[in-house]
Image (cartoon, rainbow, N blue to C red):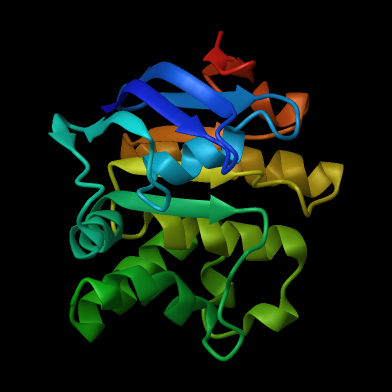
Length: 217
């Protein structure tokens, strides 16, 4: 379970972005956060990921609090526990699709044969097994985002974070990617948190929360 307690963050000038914010997302649930630009959605996601530091408050996963004062510990925690899906696909163009998917496993020290097997299974689960040897540049936007989903889940993270995952896709591809992401997250039993401007994207989630004036409702 993801649990956020009493989280506070201010702009550089001292104006509060949010104050004493609480959030809980159990395993198996996909929660979406919507809100206007500048409301703090992406900042909240970055804090949950340990990429930004709160002014105060706690972020916990499965009862363990993030140590925001230890960059090395945060990096290792992310590698083991978090899968990211971004608006920009962030695939490495010089690697094959399979190698891109296997990258989180390489960072965790998994041996080559096991990396290849697990990446192949994930590509099959998102319907791209036949694309394993191709380069990202030869794929459509929807296909690249499905590769990114496979990469986010290949190491069986407890937490999946998605930041505008359909922002670069047309409506048809957005629907297909959201269906794929939902199936993958549910199959993995992960807790998932998505931030989006799209009401259509948010509607796919199990629960929708609005971040407005520093509060979630």
